[in-house]
Amino acid sequence: MALSDSSIRTAKPKAKLYRLADANGLCLEITPSGSKLWRYRYRFNGKAKMLALGAYPAVTLQRARQLRDAVRQTLAEGKDPSLERQAEKEAQQLDGLTFKELALEWHSYRAPRWAQSTADKTAAYIASDLLPVLGHRPVKTITRPELASLVRGIEDRGAYNVAKKTRQWLNQIFRFGLAKGSVESNPATDLDVVAAHAPPTRHHPSIPFTELPELLKQIDQANIHVMTRYAIRLLMLTGVRPGELRAAPWCEFDLDDAVWTIPKERMKARRPHTVPLSHQALAILGLLREITGGYKLVFAGRNNANRPMSENTVNKVLAELGYKGRQTGHGFRHLLSTELNSRGYNRDWIERQLAHGDQDEIRDTYNHAAYLEQRRQMMQEWADSIDALCAGGNIVSIRRA
Image 1 (cartoon, rainbow, N blue to C red):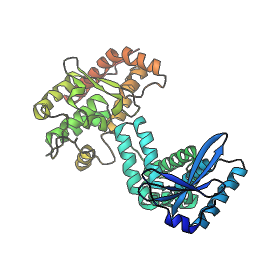
Image 2 (tube, one colour):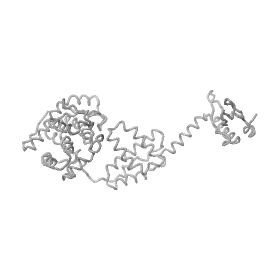
Image 3 (cartoon, rainbow, N blue to C red):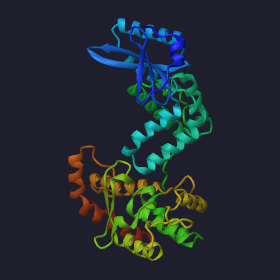
Image 4 (tube, rainbow, N blue to C red):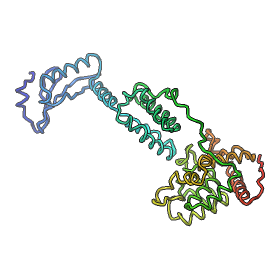
């Protein structure tokens, strides 16, 4: 017999769950707690299934029958009502997916493939430049013109490199969304077509080799922290990136074998890098050992020893000494490359010293082992040539096959 409002209202709970049938698969499930739940029982591809249609009295008998009839129509079309409902829920979730959620998911996916410094900088720029404008927006509603406007605003403040990175990140975020099915198109394509023409800049300026004595003299005489002085010297003597130096822990250094091994997690190219240490570099590390040897980091922060020296410290000091636009911490890599190439050293040795590795991982590993001793001699001669220059000695071009 079909159910009635009266029979539903008077139905009492029992010790065990039981059901009252209506018609065409509709039934009312009554739980021991007294809840009355609408269920639709059906078969699909030979399997018995059940679909929830809501709770009584919020869903009345008349409404429950309407929902049942709609589900039966879905069945008549050869579709599984349960799968259709799940698809609808997922579509609703995607419609409400915000740019912030997609961007953070993309960053979490990409971060393990980057050096930690790259991951941190990317997250910082997303938080400061993208999320305030787009974070709350459903990704499906974002258009190309507004992305172009956002990037133009970054260019207007003169941050052309940040704008370039932003265009790349936006494109990757929406491509990630396309692959996941979160968006149906990528509004971040072709943003470079309307990019502003950035003025020519020297990203990592460096002084000529012959001006090193004057720079080192000013650094030694300036009223700066001794660790900053040592950091500048080590950048000059090793050719590593400033971020690799300032975040270096003592455990990476083997002072007995005169090598510094940086794990791939801290490298830009995600490859481990072995740095031979000259006698001069070892002497500086020995002095640093007396200052920060009890801490984890070689360049432990003055206010918090668990955090490294600020990334702006070296460049700020160089600027205050009158070298703004002429020399940066990263610029010592350019100076090293220019000078060693001009002296005729093997280009592969120089590229390996700068951690510009080969894309072929097998050859990359081989070269890493084969060039260490050659680089050790090259970097010792480099350090000696700086000492000789500062002492007024003659610098000769050292040719190597």
